[in-house]
Length: 159
Image (cartoon, rainbow, N blue to C red):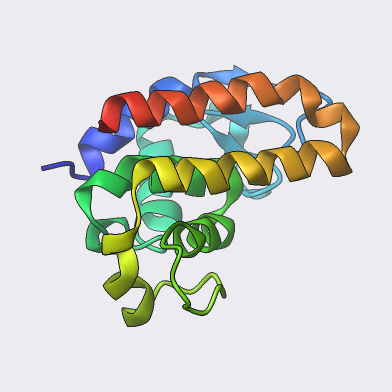
């Protein structure tokens, strides 16, 4: 059973340590925690345990990862960390290919339609989001290969 600790261990490897790329819209980042998302956090001195707490309280729980099928937990959590919970929830809803509201709120309707989703379907909508970002903000293209590798890593570890 894929629980938070299992998924966190995979995501922390995807995220890596400290970085500060001027083209990264998140700004200063450590363990995937960005200054843009958490302006009150001292990113450079962020500890591993503090990052784990942020992941659980700001991504895992709001993205309702514990309630979704195990096959979608890793990819959905990784997307929530990288794109934000609302965007990940929209991608989750799109991946059902059902006539449900695409509103970024994972409620009973979304949860009941997840049987129509798969990691492959999710990955299609997630990659489409990245392509849209690159189309709108050209300096982000340098991140596209890494984003694609992140998706492939989730698929590989899920299937």
